[in-house]
Length: 361
Ligand code: ATP
Image (cartoon, rainbow, N blue to C red):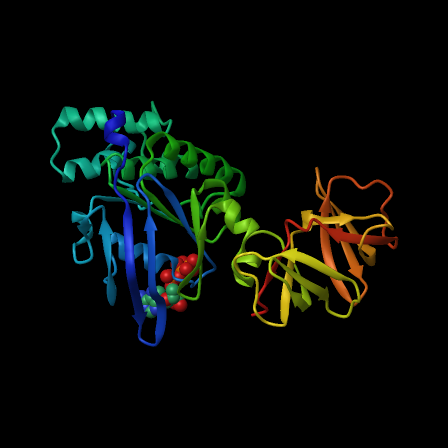
């Protein structure tokens, strides 16, 4: 494959697509644009509508309304085989009676490509997924990771405008998953093929994606880069689904032009935070503090007092469970904090630039 062949210049646009099964709204009207060459992950718990949205893009499901555009082409009513889309599934869906070569060649044979063209492209695809030399193996002679790479090669060899992957690593053990995640990421960076990837595994989404769309109950809650979603989640669902979080109930005392002053419920100390795009309007809110953003502070700084109730060693980091005044409990993660023992008093503050106020719902 030449570089020109590999570069995908097609964006995909979903405009208010929706789908119900009887009473169940599998997908509420949903719009999202995936830019040309971008790797976007649909991330959400089971039943949140990820596969429904992916299948609408693939053409396996007819939406009840809305449009799907690939570049400037309206795909909405086209059957799957006319969409030039490569699909990779969790169960690989390889043909057990065909060898590796023939599995990868399948899509090219269906498209009646000449024999030497097929040989060349399959060979390139084998090299791309590092399976050189295994072309004549049968599928059952391969490991799970190798089978998944065959599935990937088979989807890529047709040079699709769009690559769709539905939980492709679900059947692999943790070690192999991590390895293949990085391989898929590298392949993507080399080929820059527009890709939509479905997973319920937040770590996988963070490692692989240019942007992530977090889904819940048939809706996209937020779309952003991994950093944006982690540091600026729009609501409680996104904050808790992506990464570890502490949510402390707070009362808003005052809003000035640029800052909000609040108190953690039940405590006297007040704090200030700069307004951010989602600062809640109501008197009650939640303060989001990531475990790494807590600080042990000195007597001269504002703090909530507490004591350590549990210490968990996590390798390079240590997690401290701390019961705070006001009957709040938090988890803090730090590099080593020498001398901090279970039962000891601590004074806790946070890095003001990193915390956020969220709506309580
Ligand atoms: P998972 O991670 O478990 O695959 P998902 O996020 O992909 O979940 P979907 O498969 O899109 O979720 O399902 C969304 C909702 O639509 C669920 O409540 C599901 O039960 C329902 N649903 C999906 N397909 C059908 C169908 N063919 N008939 C009836 N209900 C369906």
